[in-house]
Structures are given as structure tokens and as C-alpha cells.
Length: 539
Image (cartoon, rainbow, N blue to C red):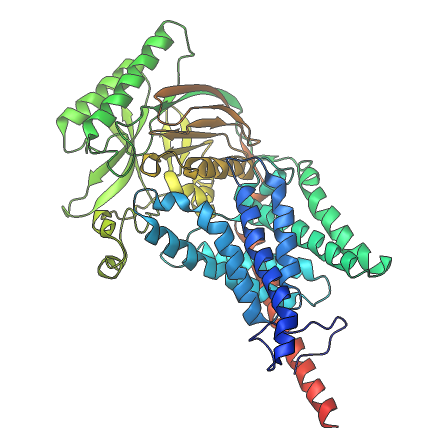
């Protein structure tokens, strides 16, 4: 028997006591409406993400989810949450199937949607509690935290905060990182949904005050956070000139590096042109140059011709060049995705290896099993993760490095800043994913990181979009996709520490704990209500 509540809600089919045929006919339209609401809410969340600037769609997206899940049981909550996840992740992750086919894309999206389904179950459990939107938003963060860590290191792609680089909540990233930004956006949407639901039920004005107040406070949190300045940590502020080279690739897709020498030559040629432009006064002379990931897929430590080309470019420009390359390890079987600091006439002076390699791309877990789903499994690499803090010195500038998808991981970027990074570099290779939205989604993450740590960010990609980003997340210059280009930016370096940098993952774990405790309280409360109802019925 369902627990007694102030607002009786008929159970979904399959989630409560057996229903009569009349009950099924009565509730079939309601179930269909909830299904449409869940899928539609997920689609709205997708539309709120870059390259669109429709950040405000996050609010109706979670308003719909909150309405759909209110009063539902956990099993139904999982189902509706899963549908919401499919509506969101299928289009968001479409780039993963660009060149490997639809099946891996759909399987990945469905698997990740299960985490959102679990969050939906938790939100359903807490939906009848006082201040339900607060607990439900914390449950969502718990789901994102889990999805960003398991399995195989997790997939943080698509966290709600990563869709908010143009929204007014962005300053919250400097207080509690992406998790707090995500929490505020979800909370505002859920509170709006709670308010709408109460209005539809024509509840009294007193019952409308709480959700309205929560929605207003959540939306005002961003502008209020902007008033909190970063704390100076004693370093000397200065300006340096940084160039990002986008050499382009010979072709789109997985075969982008089939002409590996052509990719290297493109970046050498672009750097030599940069040197000529700087000598002629057409652009400022850079203090350092950033090449993208995979700009030299020919190992320059084993191939003298590649080393000579890189050294020629570094000599021409006269400053250190950060070179993205693939190095063969001593075991002869595995490889490292590396960024080398190359000085003309000297060669490699520092090295940073990618610390978190990408499953199903740079390495293949359970290779024999996944081969059943796609022939592209055999094209996955044998990369191994590197060690280190993710920062190098270049011409007296401490550069934090997040290679490609590493920018999605809070701890990796925080480690780079803790290692003294004054500017963050995101060398990336997006050519594999063609003319998809992937590069714009990644650019949005870089903008969030700039605000989170009060650090400028330089994004250098093989094929675009490369960009220069200020400490407040603004893009000052960017390139077009699959076009050779060079960005030269006078970058302001300040020695500051944000609360997000200082607190690291603490705000996230506080929110996770709130969500888990709320779900536990909801389960206990419901069981007590069921036992109490059973005693009343027996009496």
C-alpha cells in the first residue's frame, strides 16, 4: 500500500498495487505525458549546450524533470530519468559515432543515461520531502560525481555546468567549481518546476513562496558570486604574449594522421609564417608557442627527420614551442601522449605526458569483448597514463597542461594550478570528430576552467576550434574549423587563488553527502509511513 500523502498520486503501471483495466485506461495518458516530458526535458538540456547560447533552457529542462518525477516511486523515477538521459546524451554525444558508426554511440549514450536514471530514482524518493528541490539538486550532483568517475575513470562530459559558459551563474565556478555551478542551475530549474506544479494545483499563496524564493536565490547566486574577488597570493602580475598554432590536417576522420608528416609540416609551416609576421611587425613577437595534441605523431625522439623539422620551427620563432606528440615507450608496445617543451638548438627541455588516457580511443578496455560491437576496436591505441603535476616551465612562464579531454576532469586541472600554473594550455586534436559539436563542447569546458581558477586559457587544436580565453571566461579570439591559423594573444597573468582552487573537490563532496543523506531519509520516511499505514489498516 502506498504511503499516505497530502497529495494522492496514482502509481505508475508496474510500480504499485495491481490496477484495474479502468485504472490503466485512466492513467495511460498521464504516463505518456510523463514520458514525453522526460524525453523533451532531456532534449531541452541538450539545446542549452554550446555551440548554442541557449543556456537558459536548462531551467525548463529541469522544471519538466521535476514535475515528471514528483511523487513517483524509485523504479518509475529510474525509468523517467533514463529517458531524460537519452533525450540529452544521444544528441550531445552524437560526435562519438561520427566515424565509428551508430552502435557504439547509442550503446555509450544508453550506458551513461543509466547514471541519470539512478539520479532520477533518487530525485523521485526525495520529491515529497520539505525543500525537495534542494535535496533533488544535490542528488543530481551525486549522479554526476559518480558518472564522472566510473567506469574506466568516468565520463564527465555533459555535466550541467559545462553548458553554462554564457549564463549569469558562471561566477559560481570560482566559488565551488563546476559542481556548484551545476547545482545552482539544476536547483533553479527544479524550483521553477515545483512552483509551476503548485500553481497548476491551485495551491494557496503560502505554498508558493518557498519554491519561488529558492528559484530566485539560485538564479541570483551567480551575480552575487561575482562580487567575491580572487585572493592575491603574492606573485607579480605581468603580461606575456602566447601564440597558439592550428596547422590543420590533410583530411577529416580517423585517418587524419594517415599523412603524419603532412600534419607536422603544416605546423612547422604555420610557425615559420608566425616568425616572419613577428619579424615584420605584423603581429607581436610571442614569448612562447603552443602546438596542439598530435601535431607531431612522428616520434621526434626516435626520428631525426621529425626532430629536425621541429627544431627548424623553434629556431625560426626563437622561443620555446610546446609540441604535442606520440612517443614510443621503451617496452616497444605502449605509447605516451606527450607534450614536449622544445627549444631551438637544444631540443626537449621538459616533458608532460597525458595523465588520464581515453578509454575506447587511446586504449581499449576489454578489447576482446568490445570487438563484438565494432571493428574499430582494433584501431584503439595502447597508450599508458603518465605521471606528474601537469605543468611545465616555458620562457619563465609556468604553463598548466590539460591534454584534450583532461580538461573535463576537475582534479587534473586543479593539480596543474596547485603546481603553480599561471596559464592553462589545452592542446587538443578534434580532427577525428569532423565538423561536429565536440570541439565547441570542449571549448565551453575550457571557459569554465578559466573562471574556476582565475587563469587565462589557451586552446590549441589541430583542426579547430582554437581559442584564447580570459580569466573571466570570455573568448577573445578563435579560429574556424579545418582552417590553418595562428592566434597571438597578449595574456595577462595574475597570481591569485580562488575559493574553488583552495577548496578543490570539497563543495562537490558536501553536495554528494547531502544528496545521499536525503535519499536515505526519504527511504526511511517512506518505510515508516508504509508500516504506519499497515497498522492503521489492521486496526
